[in-house]
Image (tube, helix red, strand yellow):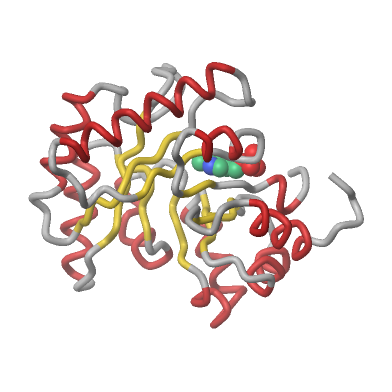
Length: 223
Ligand SMILES: *Cc1c(COP(=O)(O)O)cnc(C)c1O
């Protein structure tokens, strides 16, 4: 990457490169409000954040400009942070249990909200990672459970996959795409979002059917 390119330039180049049907969620962990404002001014539509408190501070610093984009939680959600998370995020990408979904549902009801959520899939079955096992039965069971909640709406699947851009990354994305298709094949056609791919892997993710990618470093530079 050329160091002299601005955040606005890198975002616009990426937006031009990536097909219009694929949503770009700009992953903004550790970035300042100034950096986020630059990418919002450049036309970003969606911002991803891993931490509730950091996102809350960023939103406060951005003021009304924060409302120009959708905010996605892309890090693990702790149950004791859900109230705050609901005030900061529009979309919860990392739901991986019925308990978490129920906790979101109960609190979202108090805010008269219906919260779009994705199920996080641990696509490479890594012990260190959160998410549901890449198993159709487990996923379909959780998906059916989620659909009984009035204040949670299941929109998609999200996965991290292994780091890098190797064959294992492609295999993990392919598996997640297959599960996504299988769930839709079971009639869960409300699932329309497949969120996968970061700076090193967004091209592979798009080749494997991602409808949403989450690059950070390529837009903002190294953390
Ligand atoms: C940090 C992060 C990203 C972006 O990673 P980059 O390598 O900076 O592009 C995407 N998704 C999640 C869940 C992340 O934590």
